[in-house]
Length: 201
Image (cartoon, rainbow, N blue to C red):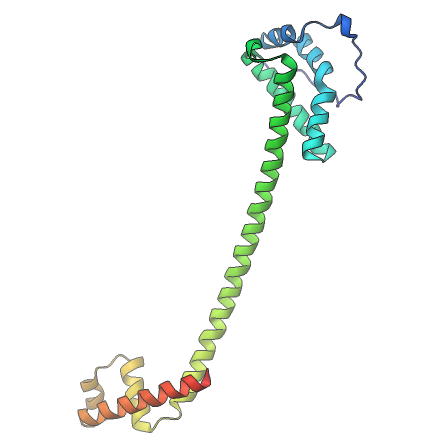
């Protein structure tokens, strides 16, 4: 059964007198049976206090009203779970109010943290990507510049071996140069390349 339609949070003026109020526990019992009149009486009794608790916790008036509505919806659904042996009806309803208000604050904080974390991770990824691209471009330019400092045989040997994947014997065959000479030129070329890149950095 859907709950009765609730009015806006009252201004604190309770239309019923204390002497004429039914016992709050009995109102909860009758509410659990689906009696809308009992539920409406509970609302009149507790709306101002529930709203006050929510307002103190969540601060924002609009959100406090939403929390109050959620609390009374829960009262309507869970009235049958109230146990008078564990406390009064007032303490049960107001504990629900405080719990729901705290949940609202935690939910809002979690959402804000997720948005902040997502923004940070996105920014970090973007920065890392840009940095990596710049570094890769810089390294390629530096390598090309340093390769230009090698002799023709050194440059060809290094390029064929390290950029084209040829073995030393294959490089020697392609350049029609004795293998020992290729190994020597390769060693000397790599040393010069290393020193050039170290200075460039």
